[in-house]
Amino acid sequence: MRRILRTLATAAVLGAGAAAQPTEGNIVFTTTSGLFYVPADLSTSGSVWPGMGIGGLRLQSVKTEYANNGIVGGDANGRVFSVGVSGGISQIAQYNTGFATALDLDNDDRYMCATGVAGLTAVGLAGGISLINPLAGATANGICRNLRNGRWAVVTSSTSPYLGELNFDGSALNRIAVLPAAASGVCYMPDLDTYAVTLLSTSTPLQIYRSNGSLARSIWLPTDVTGNCCTYDTRTRQLYVGTTQGVIYRLDNLGQFVGRRSTGRGSISGIDVFGDQRVSVRTPATGPAQARVNLRFRASGGRSYCMALSLSMSNGVSIPGAGTLQMQPDTLFFLTACGGLPFFTSGFTGTLSVSGSATASFTLPGHIPVGTPVHVSAVAIDPAAPGGIAIGNTETVIQH
Image 1 (spheres, rainbow, N blue to C red):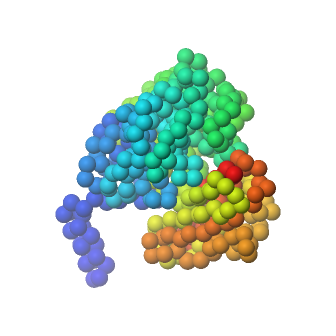
Image 2: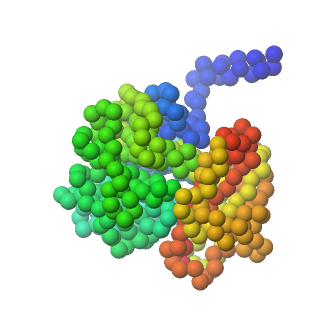
Image 3: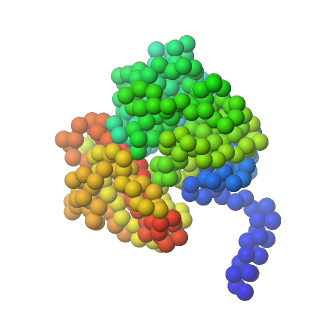
């Protein structure tokens, strides 16, 4: 009887106009009609992001804001916004370097933005903008982090479009592949060390490149579409592609078709997996110092958790039924996976708060070279999660 009453009460609240909120693993996407989310299995065409006025926010790009559990996105007027999980919009920055065509979080409270005019721009969450690399005047249309080497990958729509990599600070551009058409999006798939690149071409809307720049495969999508953006869920090893025709495709990491959904919302300009990493890191710019780690497992409040670090990653550590830890079991992994190291780590085991949050930290030794990737993973023991374990991953780089 109590369960029935709770169900009726919930239905009454929803019927009164309360907006449902996205959950971990949902696919967040933005179109000319606004900001939406769908289940990971693409079983529905899309729910409007909760909150007053959010449906009219027309962003060019979208990325989960891990620490704050919302999203951040850029628009065609050079503005970057933060949008809360239950609504509420705050403007982070305003700049004059063209569209914020794509962005990614570098886990040091900055967003790296690929812009429509100048190239690569860094935007601080508390304000402040700097042009990192003009990319020789090329229009940068996509950006992501290579989780193995810590470098940024960008794709362009210039006269001679290319896939390139830059150092963690945006310097030293290396064009690793010439693209057959203008590119609009890129994401990294760490388990196979490959990039998925969406192209503004109906003949080759999606291509997979190895990190050395060689073409692994061209992927034909089931209908005549143009690839516009893509994202990869490292836990489930699923690739999601948004198209200019408003269709979302779900593929595996080899590019095999899994499913599709026509959203009916217009051209999809940005796409991401909501709350997929569940871990964020803030790395200080000087050292030795402590890096702060924020955990946010929304669906696992009150559960036990543990963390580990690694300095390397290959195919990751697969946990049957649950997903993949983005790290290689190296010496640092085994030293930190059983509760941490005294005087080096803090809070590596414990209990999540009712809201699913926790904080931890680790010391950054001064001798580690600048740009070194550090992989951070956490698991929550949760019987309700797939495989009984909820996984969170992220990566940062040493900057001092």
